[in-house]
Amino acid sequence: MSDDPDSETVVVRTYVPRYQKENWATHADELDMSQSEYVRSMVQSGRKGFESLTAETPSPDATPGGSGLETQVLDLLRSGTYSWEELLDAVSDDIESQLDETLERLQATNRVRYSGRHGGYTLSSDTDGN
Image 1 (tube, rainbow, N blue to C red):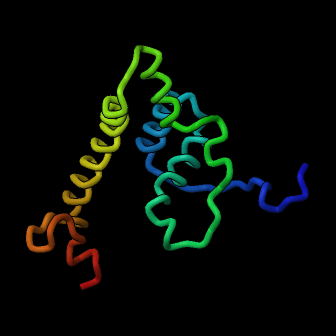
Image 2 (image 1 turned 90 degrees about the horizontal axis):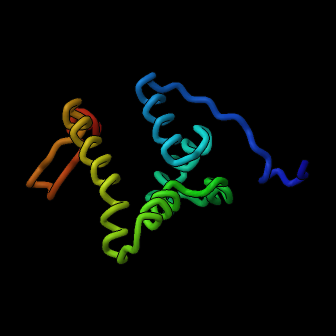
Image 3 (image 1 turned 90 degrees about the vertical axis):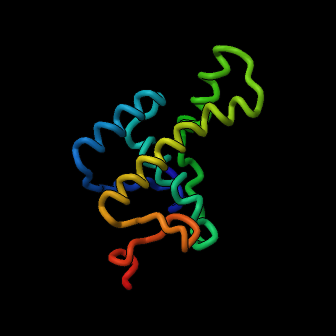
């Protein structure tokens, strides 16, 4: 066991709806990842947009078994040769679908709305504290 406190792993618990856990488990299986590895990877990748806001050092092994993106790329390349643009299209389709579904869900719950005046999506007044 290492004496380095930064290498120590600890348990984190959260509660999510059953359907969400089932979706995560399915996706983790598709990516040949454990559920813990999957959740850790998704949290780390989701935080990338906030890196400039925090001084926290990213986890050195957020994806110890390989990243989901790496798995996707390898799976694609097993079936043939792809250009950069073809690979980009293939791997970005999933994030576009996820973003679309998320925005639809947020709009359906009135947390986000589309505003031409604000140049795109914005928080609903109920959500932004106004």
